[in-house]
Amino acid sequence: MRKILIVGAGQSGLQLALGLQARGYEVTLMSNRTADEIRAGRVMSTQCMFHTALQHERDLGINFWESQAPRIEGLGVSVGAPDASRPVDWVARLDGYAQSVDQRVKMAGWMETFAQRGGQLVIHGAAVSDLDYFSRTYDLVLVSAGKGELVSMFGRDASRSPYSEPQRALAVAYVHGLGPRPEHPDLEAVRCNLVPGVGELFVMPTLTTSGRADILFWEGVPGGPLDVFQGVKDPSEHLALTLELMERFTPWEYARATKVELTDANGTLAGRYAPTVRHPIGRLPGGGLVLGVADVVVANDPITGQGSNSASKCAAAYLASITEHGDQPFDEAWMQQTFDRYWETAQHVTKWTNAMLGVPPEHVLNLIGGAGQLPPVAHRIANGFNDPSDFEHFFYDPDKAGAYLESVAGA
Ligand SMILES: Cc1cc2nc3c(=O)[nH]c(=O)nc-3n(C[C@H](O)[C@H](O)[C@H](O)COP(=O)(O)OP(=O)(O)OC[C@H]3O[C@@H](n4cnc5c(N)ncnc54)[C@H](O)[C@@H]3O)c2cc1C
Image 1 (tube, rainbow, N blue to C red):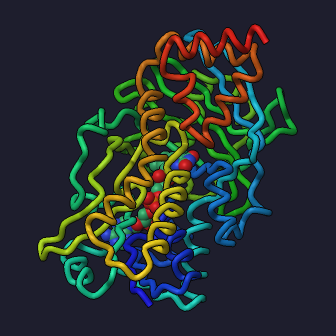
Image 2 (image 1 turned 90 degrees about the horizontal axis):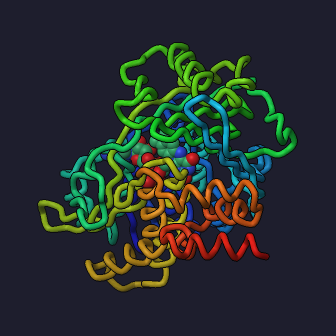
């Protein structure tokens, strides 16, 4: 059977490894950490995944935590004003529920499953020189190593990467003890709190190593009042800062967070990165070719919560391309076509995410504000998180946005 090496055991690498393994491919998975190290390590994401991405996991029968993870049935948007009031506040139901399973739980569990099913798991932080050797011994080498150093093999695609610097400073805290939302106590929802000019606070339920929890995730405009987490090493100081900023900018979220405590000493994360699209094919010094997967080739800012969703969609698309290709060589043309197939989806995510990082134009403010009075608009925006290609039809162009709002208001 064909031999495939996958470097990097995250959402995309593991999903692909388990999918290929189930189809009889001889898969080697290389990870720079063991399952136990991942499980006991730092949180990596907020990993909220919507229906289509979750369905790819169900299709492979690897949705092991679906019954334990909170079902996120709604998505809400609030906009904060400088006086800390909340002029916009709405929530809409998702057509299919979303879920967040701490990547420490999921990746560690999937890695163990892959090994139990007879997969070859190699614990090694791969370097370019290793890949040079492996590209000669495997039919295909896939690099799914996230935003790590191996991305240096893949050139930045400037035409698809409008930003060369990070657009947000990220600060995540996993907590127990968050109270329900008074407005809709029985609806599990992810809430996006937008504080114009300052940043965003995302609050969502998750399943973590210690059971059900919630995530408080600040995205701060660099240099602004939320950009204060760099260099904070003490997790309790990180949480205290998170709460202080919530009290100042989003008091409605702070009101239910007064009793929270961190889930564990590794339940915080801070960092930043520039959103980047890369050329998908890496050329090794010895002439071999490798194909980049998910964040390696398309790394968007998490402001729209799409990276894990995209990683799942990328893995599903690559799995189909690999199996459809049968015994033919995985050459450069196939690699490009395989990425292009994924880009059909990823381009919409990239366009929407990059738009959300900029200052919102008036028609976008009208849409977000109008959704408060017009439930169908709220429903459409919320469900766009599952399928961002829909934004093409009403979100970017002022005329289309205006016509859409008028049509809903008139109906
Ligand atoms: C703060 C934050 C919040 C986020 N929130 C969301 C969200 O709510 N929803 C969403 O969909 N996305 C979210 N994302 C994005 C999402 O987490 C990523 O896009 C997704 O995990 C990417 O999957 P991946 O498979 O490409 O890479 P990763 O999941 O990053 O996996 C890469 C793996 O490769 C390993 N590795 C790296 N280098 C090597 C090497 N040389 N050799 C071997 N192994 C290596 C890494 O240790 C890691 O295990 C968020 C990201 C951040 C930072």
